[in-house]
Length: 178
Ligand code: ZN
Image 1: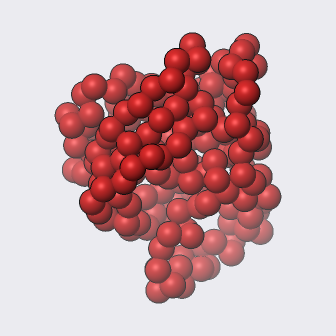
Image 2: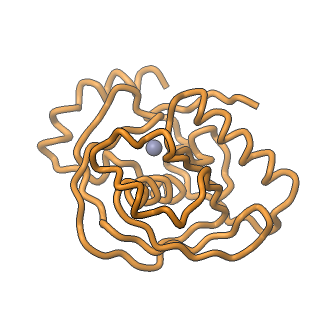
């Protein structure tokens, strides 16, 4: 089912997600809804908070992002798309990358954000298997962005005061809408 995405200023975006205790039909339906809503909005990642849900679940699909110069998709050939991550956690970070980032909860706002270049993530899939992946490039960036959402952290929390001033007007307008 397609859901409305909540925008910056909505309290759901500041909530810390609850770990999923049992992966069941509800979790699978949530994952389907997240994927459907992400695709309908041409996104490459979406977290449960963004449709006002509280479960620690996020999805991503980078197969449409190949034209981005910093995508480096070939480095992550071992990861099948789309990804559904239940209870994801970052266990290691290495290096740095600076690149443009947007968010479906912040329409038309793009800012350069510094992220780790290589991350190790543990999570469960919908079959309740425990998995561990090491990823780089844009996939590492999207994973950090989505896992931040699950902790109530937004990409505008990770930019400099100068960058924040530059988008202050847009943020204010967005907050009014939510
Ligand atoms: Zn986002």
